[in-house]
Image (cartoon, rainbow over all chains, first blue to last red):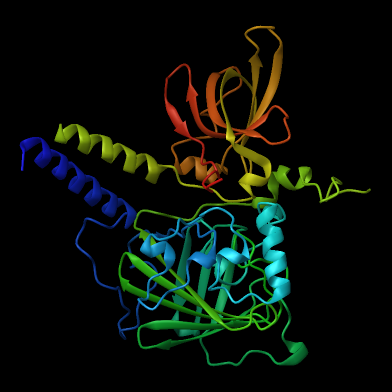
Length: 287
Length: 134
């Protein structure tokens, strides 16, 4: 091998290594620290006393690219599809089991570039989009109170409470449809499993505009394989919009120096003030 | 040679990591990534507010000398602070150069990706929501 080639090869290796370090998040390149645990062995999904730290939620725009294949990896993780990958609509996503109406509304959202995304109205994300909207969040476990809080800086400065006391979901009319739904959780060894029902229909599953109905049932699995990584998996079970349940998954990196700050989306939402409907009329205000 | 490449690559990686995104509304519904701009003018107003900080520049057309007041959207105050800003980084009367994408509706409005203050030459990321491939 000539010296010029050797230099070129070395450069390629350095670039690839640096890219890998960067792509794996802030903790990469350092020794992998083990999963923090409480005294009884339960994984700690939050901070160790004395430390700072937040989960840097990634910007997952299209959950159609986050469906694990037979190898457990998603198209985005295999690098076979760009995260945003353009707007191919439903026909570009054969693994998403759309019902016909859901296919139609998804194609509509694709054509207009998610113009009517509820997050643009400063409404909260619901379901798995909580872990796909790129603002930091924290998980705070209160085992003595048998509950877990998840605190989100964005997209609308919200929290959710997960009941760990073994209660069932409310039945019938007792289940009030809400943005975040009703969450009950339990530990399956090192995995926090959260079952969520009772969603209203005011949210989308993701930025690209996969719809859902109030029949949506989400089963979330949270694991922390090492201190720097939260693996998130969600089963999307909505017989009102999809012909069978489908699963999405991605990793969320720990930011060891991060803290939550205030973010009040509703303050000066010019986007909504300017938003017009398909007939050119203002969405807000009288006709 | 190796050191230069290493530095360049590190710089690219740092730039990418520093450009934390804010995601509030659809970028593509309001702005056109195929219409980039680079404009210099004098700050007339700063709205340090959620969900987007908006600032205004008086920009003089070099040919006609006509002055137009433009508005530019950035990320939220907390996103900007994570990118090294404070509420006093841009002040009324400062001269600044902005790069980003123009609004689709043809109004004097744009999405700012970077802002350079003429006085310091400091280049700041604007926590833009422009990440989607167009």
